[in-house]
Image (cartoon, rainbow, N blue to C red; front, side, top):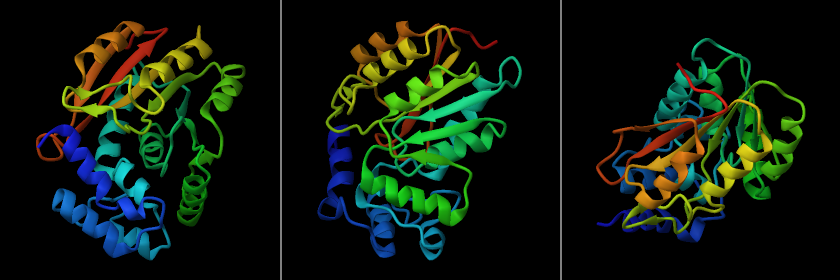
Length: 255
């Protein structure tokens, strides 16, 4: 099965429920049918049965596209390992495409002295996420705003290390050649260019969620934008279903 077919299968499992709130059995069935694990969509440190019992709710598309705990935890650890070199510093974490806010939650767990803000432009997703975070009393801020406004505001007022977790919807970007970083919605390459331009002169760490196979042309276009970069992959699923993170710095080099 091609990478695109794997991704399409995930999306189509709940195609009719894409913009509807899922019942617990639907969340667990998605995990079972896609990954042989009813607890696959674990978020905020809780398996589905526990977060659902506490009143947490997800749209179908959020359940499919969110970064679950195991992956978000691994990404957060690798971000922190770079951000704290050569020593811990004050940091601002921005998630331009926050969705459930779960990755931001885990990044902040690994950078306990950092402050963070997530941006979610979609009103339906934002309302559920804001309610979920409030229900669990999690110290994560998510705003119903385009990330450009937040980035512009923060660029004018902070001297902190900027950590940007970049994971826009993949859409049709996952092809047989791998994940095309130029084909996400919006293009990852475009988001990186905006962040680097807006935070010009400040220290920036970009963490970009990627697939285990990346379109080589798009990766070759991305790497020269950074002063330092590294690629981490996580062997958490079956081959063809794994994700990773591309880490890149601008304005500084970790040592």
